[in-house]
Length: 187
Image (cartoon, rainbow, N blue to C red):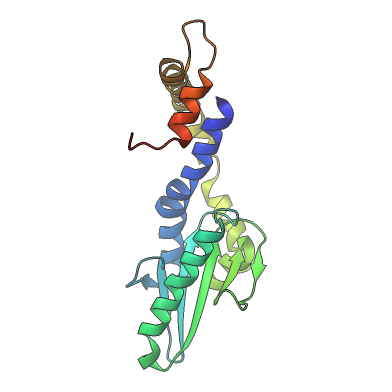
C-alpha cells in the first residue's frame, strides 16, 4: 500500500512543486512573461531571440508520449511565431537535477536542470544554492503537518482498498482488483 501511495505522490509532485512553487519563482527571477500558449510557462523575448520555457520540477517526470507532446507544444508555438523573424529557443527547465541535453532529430528543445537551469534564467550560477538558503528550515516546519496528512492518506487508502478489493478474511480478491485496474468499464 505504501508503494502505491508513494507512486501517486511522486506523480503529484509536479503539480505541487512545479506549478505552485518553482514556476512562479522562475517567472519572477527570469523577468519573463506568462506564455501565450499551453505547454509553455514563461517567455523571454529580446530583440533577436524568443526563449520559450516549460518549467518542470525535476528531470524524470516524462514518459515517451509526454516528451512528444511537449515537443509538439514547442513546435506549435514556433510555427505561430515565424513572422517575428527571431531565433526560437525552446527550453525544458527542470528546477533540480543534472540533466543537460541539446535539440535532436526528435526534439526541438533543450533540457537544463538544477544549477544550469537557474543560472540560465537568472545569470547567477549560485542562484540554486541561494534558493535553498532562502528556504532555511521552512520545509522542516511543515514535516509534522505533512506526516499527519500522509498517515491519514495511508489509512484512508488502506480502508478503501480493503473495502473495495478484499475478501471478508482479509485476502485480496485479485480478479476484482485486476478487473478494476484493467477491465473494460463499459460492461
